[in-house]
Image (cartoon, rainbow, N blue to C red; front, side, top):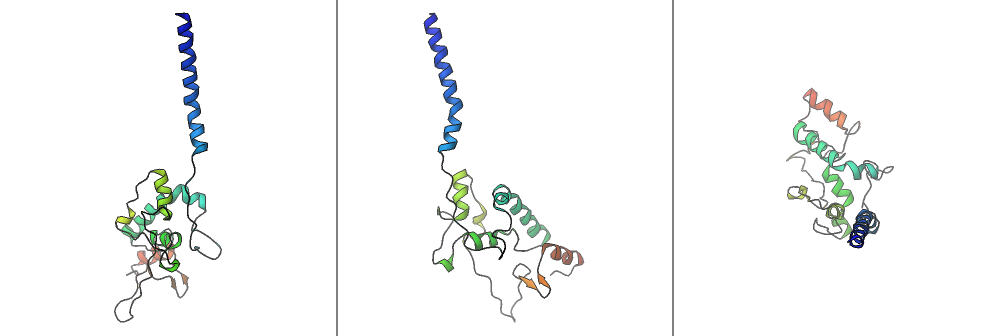
Length: 170
């Protein structure tokens, strides 16, 4: 009986040590997702709108904040917009290859499928780059979202907030 009890303790100790080691072996043996390179740059001096580590950690917070500014406050700028993310990170017509969200080559899908996160953005938004809308001067004028610069320089969130407060934004 004592031998059997000692063997049971040894077996439990071995099982416990194995369970403790599993996260370490799983972590070191799991390959990271293959994230495609961006196809464009945000500016000449900056690759992305924010540092890579910050985007990896906080991109959803930025997108939700941008959504609130756009939908609730009417502020539309390229900074942190989903359209601009897609235009920089997803290959489109210009590259000769159109990549859709169901492809492993899609920038968003590469990490979201790895993390097991469902993406519902593209039920409404385009999952591939879209060309800028061209407006005929007699038919319509571009919205602030399509205007990339004013006579004094780039449109900033601060500028749009001030114009909105002054009631000068259409």
